[in-house]
Figure 1 (cartoon, rainbow, N blue to C red):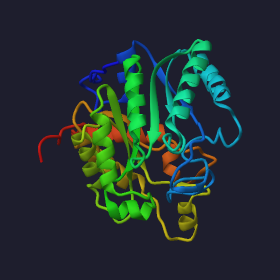
Figure 2: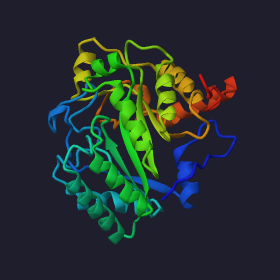
Figure 3: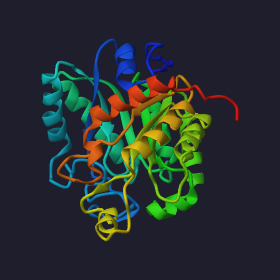
Length: 319
């Protein structure tokens, strides 16, 4: 599928993801998250080590660690999606880093997932892969091209987090900003492949404009979408220990909103916003509590931007 940019209604303050999917595919589309247990090169094992913010489940729901096979994950989540009234999904291989395993094995997992979903009566309109910027092998790029050629909307979700080397070191990411720049640029150059960058706000030692600078860089490199979220504390993460010891204070709602608005304004008008804040499970979130009120936060963000006469892309342009 050669995907053309489709914007939301011109009165929208930002180019939201759900509306774009609805327009692109003619109806609501849901993401079906999957865990293949690929692991991460930055961890000692599936449950230990890793980035400072990562909990033992590696950013997913821990299905693989609980012994839930891929087919069963699709059955459980797929039936839930069908009950919601839609049949169209994007399969999202979310947990850890998808490419931290032999690509032929992973490609078999993708085929298994597509086939299993189809048997349930689910229409797979796309696939999305969560990856580290330092794990983008040529075999993976070829796999993405094959998926595009089959007419699937194909996304590479790159864990950029930040382009700043000092921040990356503090986050214990295990790579530098150059790895992210190379990953976004190289993936975006593959015909039909769409790149979404995950970006974190509220990292210590930074400036209010850092999130905006990172977002601008992603789109200048050819990225098509971003997922924003504030740095937050999950139970069992290294950040959890720092927070309990009084060595880390999470970003407040007002500060994060200021960073986010500036980032939205520095994006191109047709850049896609897949996420504005975190989706942290209540039973795993330690702090800050304000991110649990996701709907309220988005309402307050919208009101703030309306009051100030701001919108996505109003600062975009050569700089």
